[in-house]
Image 1 (cartoon, rainbow, N blue to C red):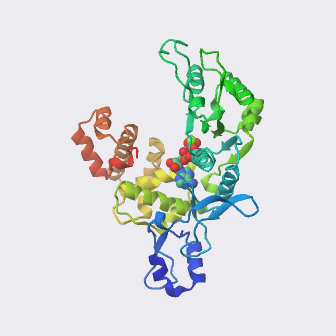
Image 2: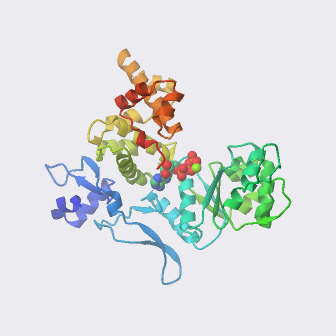
Image 3: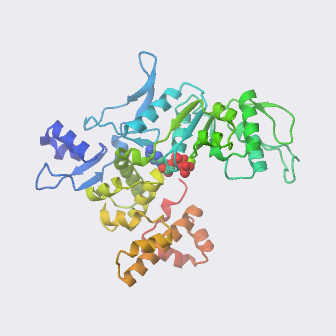
Length: 410
Ligand SMILES: Nc1ncnc2c1ncn2[C@@H]1O[C@H](COP(=O)(O)OP(=O)(O)OP(=O)(O)O)[C@@H](O)[C@H]1O
Ligand SMILES: [Mg+2]
């Protein structure tokens, strides 16, 4: 790694300080101000995180207690333990605690409730629990309890017999059956309709269920993980969620901390998203200015990690230089805000034509991005939905530096 070479004369203590004080994670190169070796780095440069990531894996220690053990030492031996634990990038003590809990859960079949604000990584945590468990070779089936009507949720979860209702032309297995031997992840459990809360409780108690329109009891071996961004205890107090079901689900509680309470995770996450997006979109952006990183560290992140991910991806589309700059990041920070809030932003005194241009640019970028996302990067479909010609749509993408690879599945 180049950092090792460039800082070879620095001594490990100074290197350790440089790394710690500047939020530098091991999987990067440091590019120092050439005038002095003690200067703060100007840029954080992604080297190749995957080549040097020191992955953690679940192992059994001599005392029989499961825990996290680094699979290889840090290449810089800085004492910083940035890790990717089943895709979860983390440095903060709070997230290390979460990962350690996941590792402890590996040997069990306990029901887990994951609570946390939107975008804090609840689904990632659920996947990590599944993939670290003995069920990893069987499927993890996800289901969003908020998205559908009560009767549809019921038939999706429990399946239905042929002729159970109009349109039920064939017998269909539900999510419980599909997840047999594996894990069923019930997302947004706080939004599950009351009638179905009773049914779910019965399945958890009796470990049996019937398909809609059927009378044969079916037994499955399923681990249940649920997630919610609501305070379920409060929902119980307010009479919106059944107390008996709450206790059945809340056997082990994992609280996914908001990003603002674990800012140490911002630098490694930023570099991770930068690297990922650069590869996917073949963009030659290799790092981020220190100033830009400081700006990221000063944000409240109400949308948490998903918001950070969006900001990095948006910035990479716009960036003209080889590193992400503070001004590009600044222009992408509040792109999720409503148009009238954007107008507030321009009240800061931007000349009319410039403000109008910026707003239109922002609209076009958001619109095109949204259409591409909706159609998994298929330009023909996205252009069709926008009622624009393919060529026109493609030209706009080109002008804005948007590539379709960021939106295609796989
Ligand atoms: N620690 C992490 N390391 C890497 N990527 C992460 C991490 N946490 C979250 N992400 C990414 O952030 C995005 C949001 O994560 P996820 O979907 O797990 O959040 P969530 O809490 O389920 O959100 P929601 O409440 O909106 O359903 C995903 O793209 C995920 O890959
Ligand atoms: Mg989710």
